[in-house]
Image (tube, rainbow, N blue to C red; front, side, top):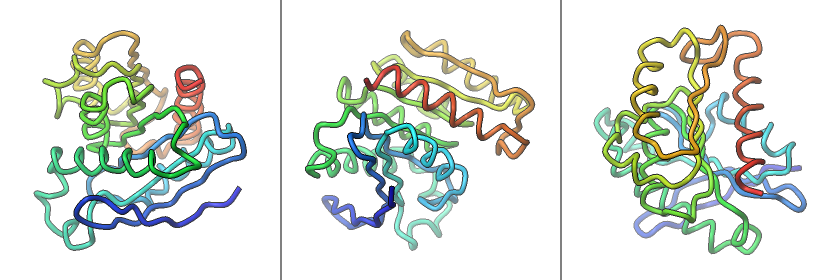
Length: 210
């Protein structure tokens, strides 16, 4: 498998992305990175590799231009990030290799907020959402509108984020789940932590995208 650099032509700008499509892909997972990160996030790319090995197409793209990313407020502009993510799903649907693949979203940190807000907007077009160390509390009001099965993955020792995700879990429709990664902190740097995230995410997508 080979990762291809693509240009996402959106309504008002062009953003770079990295796309990997295994043979006979079972679904497509679009990633939404956290603030201060990009499509080059090593943790997201590690998860994407695991998904690709399991037969899922992956798309990682920059939600902001370099100039926008220099502005602190823009990094936390959840409506803007959600809009970009929704437009990325529309772009994917226009690509012949991706058009018919069941769609999942993966959000990390603040990217989880935009992933869930996009899922609420897109409705049944999104079949599954996974959040890694996410901030779903930033879009608490829209969570009851998320129809996609949602898996919230949080490091066991990331206590503040655990509490925020517990509150969010109560607002989500079933099937949804909050799962703590043993021994992990916010960045999942501990041995085996990121592998546990990747395995859990893969199993979730295999369950709900197939």
